[in-house]
Image (cartoon, helix red, strand yellow):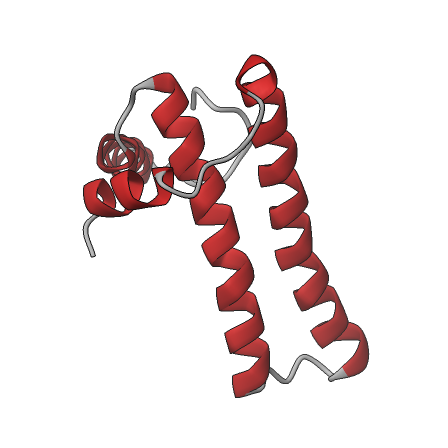
Length: 108
């Protein structure tokens, strides 16, 4: 599936208060990324870092929720997920060429 198609289809399930859209979406994104992190925390704590097929399936579900929130934020901002992905790869490629992948700060 292409990002554009996902972004359009996911919009059909977007139900949230318009007046608080950005707050709702950013809080939802934060919550879902926390759920991804929590899955890995439990794998480290309870399973000696051994990831099962069930673990993969559960993380995949949570990543899908993260993707949904990203799509809705993009929709609200009138930007494409494909554009976000392309710009991110361009930024990372530039950092790699300049040997700046490690370190801190957005503008390195």
